[in-house]
Image 1 (cartoon, rainbow, N blue to C red):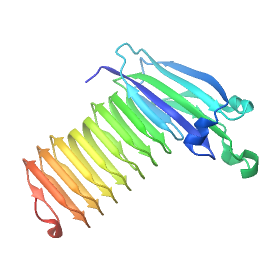
Image 2: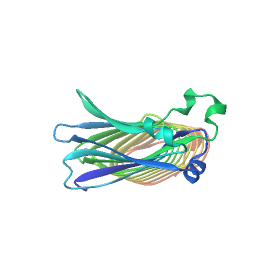
Image 3: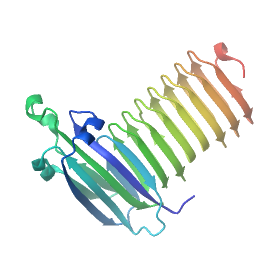
Image 4: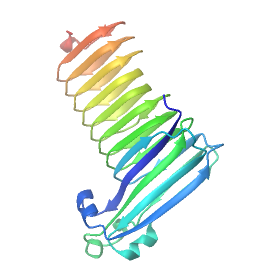
Length: 265
């Protein structure tokens, strides 16, 4: 496990055009930065709009550092871009500021876009909460993670504590080397987890589930469709309800409990 992390939040986007089209039409750019002493920070809460996120470690982190590259279609829109850090009693919030095109008429903002690439660096002792509308996320080496995401692929590595995903509407989820995983609602996309303390998936609507090297229990509450494949589980493996798709399990040390219509392994 690395000793600290830099979380890179890229392509935070709000506009009417697609991300690819926005990037192609980027005409005006500006750098934005905000910092805060990390000594007393235990939790960082990041509010992002859309785009991709990546993370990496830094053993000497003594500040929470957020650096952004704003990209907009009109120069005047740069005034509405920025990064704000807000200290609350129990956490530090990092907020990306972009012009909200939804407040304008479609004709006034047609083809307009605002994008920001955001890097957030923090020690690995800090818990992270991310609110994201869409886009890919890559994050590693944090104390714990809570992530809400509407769409886009998620890649998480080396999280010492629990990982909670209250809701993920679409996109694949890939986790490696994490603590106790809880996914409350996953609407679509594959789930792959390799190396976890335990795994609980309350509701999964569609997409394959592949679990490897789980030291504790695996519980899947409801799975509507897609194959479930489980290998090397130190505890029990329980599937409460599975509507369609095969279930394949091997090397489960504890008890195995499957719905009657899905018996076999």
